[in-house]
Length: 199
Image (cartoon, rainbow, N blue to C red):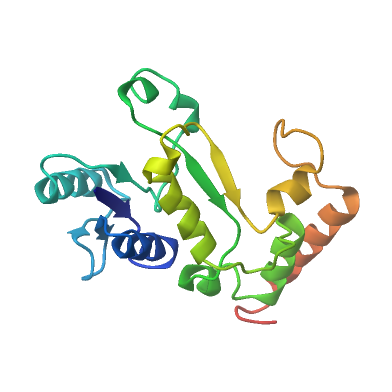
C-alpha cells in the first residue's frame, strides 16, 4: 500500500509516516527538507502541482491514501459522488496542542500564550499532549479498518472539544463564559506587552 504524507518533515506528519512504514506500508514523505521523497513547497500552486507530479512518478499505478498533515480537508464534500461515490474517503483528525517542535517554537514558547491556550483550549489530559495518539488516529483512518468511515472529524485533543462543548451537541462554534473570556483577554494583552520568550 502506498500513502502520500504531505508535512512529513517533522511532528505529526513524521510520526504518521513512521507508523505506516513500521506497519509495512510505503509512506511517500512530502516536505521541504532533504529527507523528503517529494520536495515541494505546498504553499504555492506551482509547488502543489510539482508535488502531485513527483508522487505520480513514485507511484504511477495508484495511491492508496493521502494524509494531509499540512492541510485541512473540506469534510462537507465527503458524501458527494466524486468522493464517497468514487470510493474516496474524506475524514479529518482534530488534534489538540501536541508536543512538536513547531508548537514549542510558537504556541508554547511564551508563558502568557500558554495561559491563553489553557483557557481557550483546555486539555484535561494534559498540555501539550503526545504526538503518537494523533498519528495513530490518522494511521487508522488510512487503514482498511476505516473503510466505512467518511465525512468524520475525529477529535484527538486531550478532551478539549468535549470540555468546551459540554453535554450539548456541537452547533456553531465555542461559547466562552465571561470569566474565561476575561482571562484569555488579560493573558493575550500580557503576552503582547512582554518581550518574546518571557515567562
